[in-house]
Length: 242
Image (cartoon, rainbow, N blue to C red; front, side):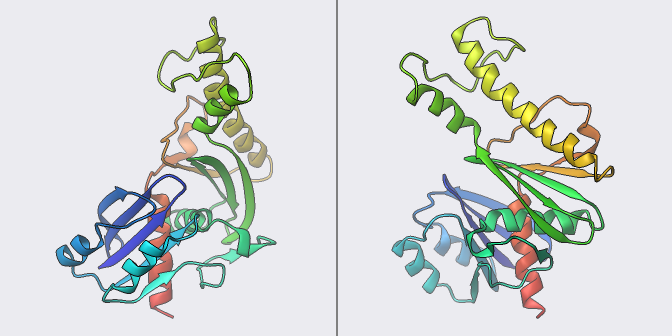
């Protein structure tokens, strides 16, 4: 069995895979991995991989050192089953890399846009030949709400939950609709722009915010909140066979 660890800006996700099948997912602090001893006692773990978008704490490093098996710390030097065309691979977020690996593995021989709606929203494109072209980063939903409050004098901090009209008729609904509708239009814009050159484009939507939106493009969109974990497991399996 495989141990997969994805440490994000907000939380850490630990997953157990039995070959290619996801068995269980745990969430916890991204500064400590206190459930590791429990996982090692519950499952016959043989190997593992960790990816992090933050600097690993000394606590986590000590916990990893105690594991009774080899664990790969994913970096730009780790072999992956795709071609990475990013100009500065050492600066690329490993969660973004794992997501496109998973998408290309799940839907081989397709042009794919991966949208990850988490702390930030990332847009990453991999073509049908398995070539990762790169992508873009924009503020996530909660970041947008917070920024409107922090960088203005009178705009309130608005809850994500509530009415989302096309046009706000109060300051609260204007902010909520502005943020959420803005993200919808942003995502749709990326999709329709790529479709001009890649008419058979597929889209994977993932991320902690589990963002969804009404669109005529839904037939080509696949929602998968475990896409990064699946990509990490794919990379681990790929390296195990090298």
